Image 1 (spheres, rainbow, N blue to C red):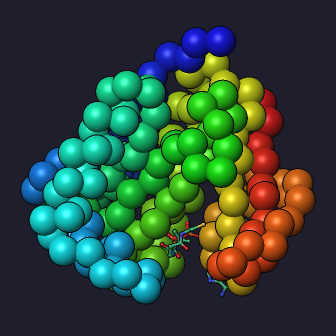
Image 2: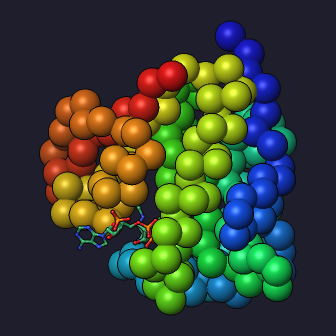
Length: 165
Ligand SMILES: CC(C)(COP(=O)(O)OP(=O)(O)OC[C@H]1O[C@@H](n2cnc3c(N)ncnc32)[C@H](O)[C@@H]1OP(=O)(O)O)[C@@H](O)C(=O)NCCC(=O)NCCS
């Protein structure tokens, strides 16, 4: 089965979503270092952005940055990735800078990307979320995901949320 690529520009009421660029490395480093044990340098994140660009070119799925209208301030990213899923049934992900939490931006952006992911021809999208991550579980529920099952991993219990269309 072949799928259309996700669009590389999506507009919502308050946001414009476009792929990460080298100029995003600084805030992306801040975002990645905020909740992970390992720390990344800006140079490493620049390499990651390059890999992300190539992955999107080859697979047709990947990350889009949330850029606030009208000034384009970057708030975080939302992505369709293989993750714990597959190319046919990939995962939806989202992660925002702390200062952007609590305004509905994750829901707004992820909803638009989820719609776009289904428009590629896919019928099922997953989201795997730590059972402790109430805000993320809430976003998934608002988007129409339902709990499928739970796995226990090194990071703790992971809830597999699924959305079918
Ligand atoms: C998860 C995350 C992306 C949410 O971003 P956001 O823009 O604040 O999300 P939204 O504002 O769209 O929605 C958040 C919802 O969670 C709710 N919420 C927030 N904190 C909560 C808590 N402690 N318990 C229960 N619900 C909570 C909010 O009230 C809101 O629901 P509502 O609209 O019904 O009121 C953001 O918290 C984040 O980046 N977290 C760190 C990265 C992460 O965990 N990513 C997901 C990995 S699976």
